Length: 266
Image (cartoon, rainbow, N blue to C red; front, side, top):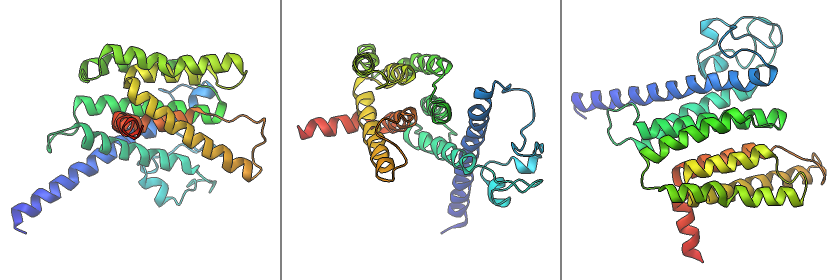
């Protein structure tokens, strides 16, 4: 390979590394949201600190993904374990930014397109909602409003998904979920129903249907595994938001293709 070709490959690799770092940094803040919002702590004030001993983290301890590995998952001050979820969420953010770039950005020298950035923002909100729902079984309305606003942007940046499809998407899953929740108390939480509605507006009817189908597969598999291990009883409830978030995240990239493939099998 000529020197010029090697330089191009190097610069492309550097650009992808930068994209990963940006995504991981954003999702590092999402970690802050997940842990602080339910506690009523300020998201803007207060330095990041060890939740065991209160040690204020230095800049070197805040490098996304890298710091966790260098510290071997332990606090530098007290040696207490740092939740692995911090690390994995940061990695997911880096991967999400890169995937949004690859899927929605058509210039190799562009950091990310407006379409890719919009989808990345949607994934960030989903991650925050899923993380808090996992801990508290509550999906805050602020996340629903954010996705609703992102859906307005999606209507402009993704005109191939028309307003009628988005309107149907807002109702096609959420209304049956609401009816089922009224018939069977506790079948779905209000946050799940609202998340399905605003995600249907963001994604469109076909994609939200595919995403919900994936969510039920994941959630059903999880429930079956927990029941088999006797870690859940038949009457126990678990947070369904993380599974909805996973399904809708996948649908943001390939929801319509999955729906078309499934319809083609009928």
